[in-house]
Image 1 (cartoon, rainbow, N blue to C red):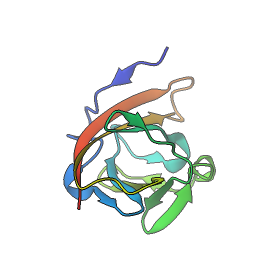
Image 2: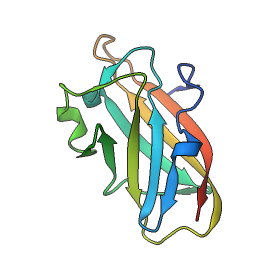
Image 3: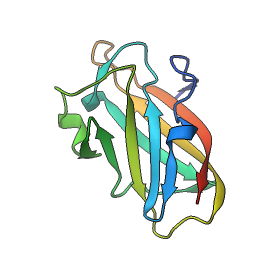
Length: 132
């Protein structure tokens, strides 16, 4: 059974002031919920809920240092480290634009630290993100 942990290593998993809703979907600024840098290969967004409705992560990408990776490509990124001071952008297309105003966004992120075998660190963060 998965246990959800508070993101104790950063004030937010989702940084609301740097996240945005576009006509194509969501761009969520995520902070690493871990005490040290990790390769992108051990990071996986697993769920997105907007206003109580699950949004599929089909077509989602993670952007780091100007490069985008599909979720399927993340496990191959053993040489790309997500440093604890940095954010990644989670780009998630939506089937239709979200209405103007604030939206409650919840992201679940799994980490599989390479030096702790069998651990899945599950963090869930939420924020209110404004659509124009």
